[in-house]
Image (cartoon, rainbow, N blue to C red; front, side, top):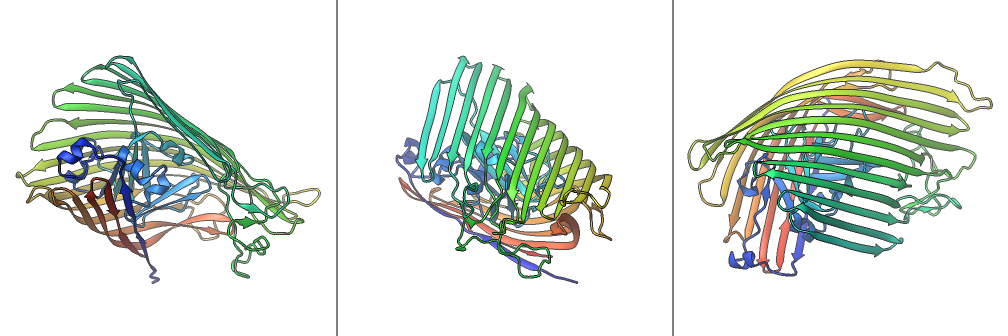
Length: 587
């Protein structure tokens, strides 16, 4: 048996100096501002929800300087965010995925205005004009349409208002960086119909130094993003939201700086890749690089209080993403030998979610829902080595997923509540992979026929949640819960090594968590703590073998961790935010 133990930690601290003191803050003895969230699909005080959630309102986002998903990790314990070319990769409590191809599913679900985001390219551009961001840690499934084993990030845009308004700012900085952000709100019919338009334009020269004369300079930005909303409220019980957003990149973008492989390990590793002199952000790239990305989403949301005790929510969404990416793969100083990679991604998806939620103040509160998702995606990948070998890979994937889910809370006494949830998920995937290897001699020829791998499979799962919370005193709550999570299996479609499985199994997780949420000193101090233990079965692990991505299932894995969220209101214009977290994994 092989045992691998890893540990990771996150540490965040923030000192915020506010410009003014709101009247409510002064009247309430400098109490920390209450944050209302909708993480449980009904509005509630963050401190009254028995789960690990970090939430930022509009003011909190501005004070912390959070403008994109990457910066969230600076203020959320046990959260790590990175970028792989255009894709945003999120890990929560050590759980994430390194596979950003179309054959893999993320372990952390991203939702924009309750619409599940299938592919996260260009996500950071959609954080402007945001009303609230919620980060949920731990398996999700009994409240959300799309299930996730690691957690969920919910980004909620500012809704159209009933007053006319304009907000705008412009920034200029190093590398000729220019950014314009603006929002226009127009009420068309008082208290009935309003619209809102948000816009971001970002342009910057690259800061990666290219030692090749006249070569392209990467890590630049040339992007445009906009969001348009129309909110119709014909009655007090009915609202209809129509939303569309678009993100466009036409630049070189974030490109990799390849490091030398240790001699002979691996045997096909690159050597002499660093420019002279060897410096950070200094490369030698004799091939032009580029990025062309267009991603757009549309959704319709209907909220209808059709009887006094029940509200219906229906969300239908459509996503279309096209991406074309060129990179210099070898980055060495040998002009006679070049390796160029060209990756393209096309993804079309649609989803529907229907929820019924109780709205009374009775002891029993409940939610039931249905979710359906379809995605059709393609990803050709061409690697050209001159002189040498051309490798032409390609993936095609079709996904059809549906789920029924529900959750209920029951107030056993004035201080004790019980919690339970259940979910059934059915996933079906069809995949096709191809590889063709050709020699770039003159004339070029392909010594072996194209290899094709085709697979089709389906999986289903029942996930559940049980828990309880106890509030023995005002502003103090203790909670504990046990929950399970599930992520569908998939396929190794590109030339899997001999003996390797072409199908990998779903991964399943059982989570044990206890926590305390408390407010002290007249709510000038907020402390939220949690301790957790995860047991994994068939953890999905991805890696590169012979220029092919291979995913396998680890037999068992475990994660242990603790985290603390603390806010200290020191005075009328001083807030300290301190949020450490530690997680260790054993495989």
